[in-house]
Length: 138
Image 1 (cartoon, rainbow, N blue to C red):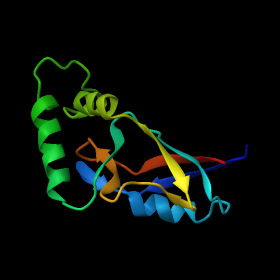
Image 2: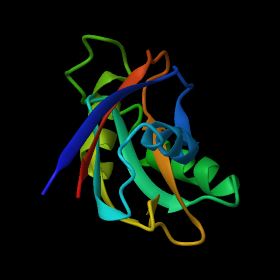
Image 3: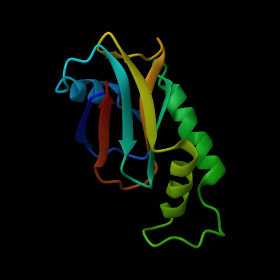
Image 4: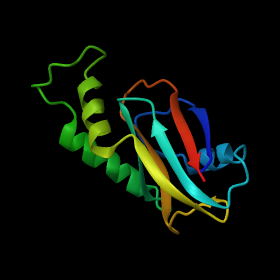
């Protein structure tokens, strides 16, 4: 088994859910020509998340943001607010949604479903750039 790894830096995004599939596909162009394997995507942050969901209708991303904001934001009992009122809500969202994905590689491409895209969940109001570690096992 061989392993190839690369860290990529995503540009800062506003709070919400953003499709980052194309940025990952572009990064994979620098990987060895792998016809089949497993790609792990690891997000190196505790206030953002990655997940797979609908890639066609942008209202899905809006609804996702509305749901998580409604359920988690602005709770009076949060004590962890060192970096602002959005600090603890961002950590909770990150824990619920997760910080890593495993995606099979088939015919040298991510084997996603027809309507699947990779989302970055940005949970901070004033986020910085985010880093992803891409690890290919083949």
